Length: 386
Ligand code: GLA
Image (cartoon, rainbow, N blue to C red; front, side, top):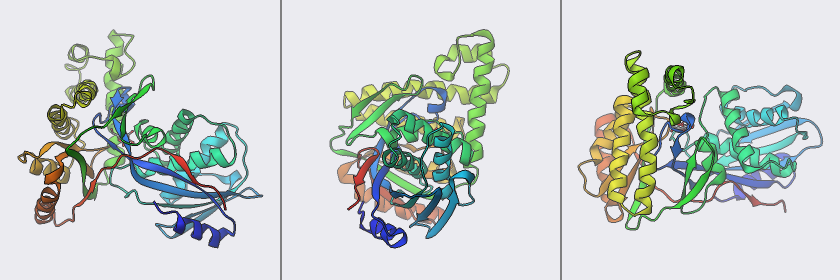
């Protein structure tokens, strides 16, 4: 993304030359709602980013400006708390986490810009938190390792936004690598880069352009349900501390008869964790048909069993299913809106997009936006001060 505008804005507002950092949004090929259950995920960072331009101040004040929202926010390091403006809360949440670690730094000026669409399930907020953490770490020489920065960014969301998100989005935004997906074990945090060689095909995102209100509370509810399931299994199998450690036999034995709703949610997660492993093998073997089939299975589970889809996303998946050029499709991310991710034959993308745009408009009166995924690098310094 071009840095001229953010640089100019910063200089005009604050009169100094900033350092500019970028953190990307992410896709997730497969492995949904598995991260907070210590399972596997397969995300990748994309070429859409959040930019942060920043410079130190000589006092303890924090001055923020968002180009997108045309809003500013100022505070003092001694008064860091969640703000009404959510974009500011992500930045302040990071500051708060750094303060809790006893790190010392002065005030700063920060301007924010980006081209990751909001509410599209591409983790613009994780990108914002990561960009902030990365930037503060660099300019104040805090010497934090990347993984620590990921955890700080995640905690900022827990504590200042109230969404008990897993680690996937921040991890992908920090560790992303061009043309690779990240196979992340959310239990050990060990990861490997998996080349995304899908010759003749592309991942295409169709943005439903809806984000239902339910999203945050439902997310936390699902997390609770999984924890309850684990607690029931733990009574009998003391070694089970997450759904990663559980299997279907344990669920049948300990959860099914006690709470069917929780059983179903847990069953989806256990199966999805397994599916990520198998999907990684598919990708390695270039078996895109099989990978696509698993994507459809994931959607079915997220929609019918885990119940985090919505009619717009279901429509977008159902509508592409009969098309033989589409090997797989599913809703992506937390749910209740945002994008579907589709594995589509390259020469059929244009036609498919046109058709789907018309169908979606007819059905919901809404515009469909689409985006052909390019996998870019993770968080990085983009430009030093002049
Ligand atoms: C959101 C969360 C992630 C993950 C996904 C679902 O994007 O931030 O941690 O749980 O939902 O897979």
